[in-house]
Length: 293
Image (cartoon, rainbow, N blue to C red; front, side, top):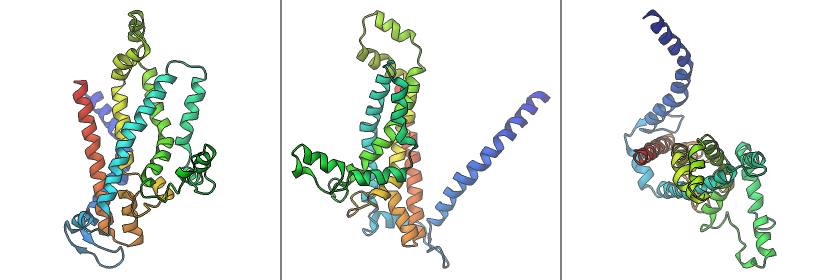
């Protein structure tokens, strides 16, 4: 009994620093944002309690443009799930087969993940430049000059133009997770299927991908929540423009907090982002758990 208690005490002592950091860095700021979201406060003068008025404002006040930003975030999340993850899965399946230069390709695809987002933003600003950008120059080179235009300055193309760098930056991250998951799978089932005459597509569909569902669940959660709280790359490329075409909740939040000193509305948006990320994380876990069961 004494040994069991000592083990529990040791476990608690080792967990204590992590728990303190978790509470101080995550829980306390969320609670503080929840409190500030109930106030009318500019960060300097005395605050005034307004209840849920800030939450009503973000959905009803047109000048905030929050509903459009939320729609853009959901579009980015959908594109991430239905475009980014399938590409990552395809790359992982190809690399996991043991092709020549497998390790090299794995490292190359992962390089964008470790590059600073600011650097990536500046790089893609040059790529999209309407005068000397590689996109417009390539279109002109193949005789499609009529299609070249200001990609980040057009309301119709700005959001998708922002998504391409996001796809480029994180496809290697998800690919590496899936690649590692495939490599950790037992080879017995694959070898048995090959003996029975199954081709590569059948093996991937009925063996590899079903066994990969726990990893796919994690990737889906990362892709959706990452899109819902996206900020840095969008801020660098478009700052939410033109005319709120690429605006997302995080860019609206920053503008309300630091440009307009509206801490109540900004905190309300922050709480919304936290809530919606938790909601979709739980929803995705429920979906994958149902499929597994």
